[in-house]
Length: 200
Image (cartoon, rainbow, N blue to C red; front, top):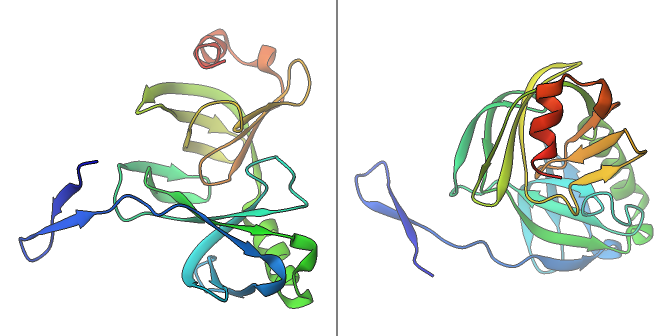
């Protein structure tokens, strides 16, 4: 696989490496420390990550048994726009670095930190309108209006990222673990329905 290069501040090329495969860690051996910016510091016997986000399940799958640890890659395709939490850049390079298995084995301190992190970040927006839905690099780029304002997000495929709650109600989880609900697909305008139909 060829490495991609980008000019650095010094004028010399810097190398973008392919992300390393996710590692598996035992919850009983994990230490979680909250950071001021809302991320977590994850300490394991083999490695420490200074700024990560943690999402239960992968996503929506066995949420009580393991958690996915995500980090924003410095490479990849940056997609400017409003993320789930507000203004900013959402990086296509976001990737999974670890899986925390055996969540029941977490220490009381780590469990409290993880629960507070989950409550702060696993919020759900209701999608009211789909402004655009574009496909690129095997991903779907959404631009929507929600009950919390305009949002832009990315999903890759539908198997793990789209879940039907009823025949008319849908829950979407993006690559960063943010959740978006469509309370009624039939209740959306026709253009929004047609765009969603392209990925289902």
